[in-house]
Length: 110
Image 1 (cartoon, rainbow, N blue to C red):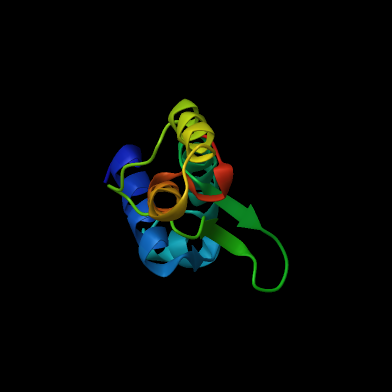
Image 2: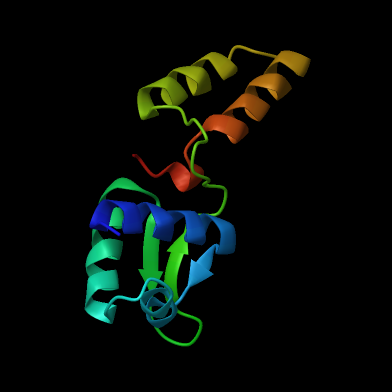
């Protein structure tokens, strides 16, 4: 398995599990811990993936992120937020639902 294929498989596993340890991922993909750390570093640059240390630490994907889901660009989200200010009632509620569904989780830019 090539590095890019392995990284996508790691991302898929994280999207399914939401959290895993570096050691478990290394065992699962039959590579060294260092290789997984390199993979995670590469994923962090492009996807909403992050690491934590300590008890319960490991590799995480931001809650609400899933592969294949389309997200708004920051400029698109900002425009919709601006437009929402002029809406009332059901239109405002609908715009909030759109933003909740398609805005990138935790405001993290992709």
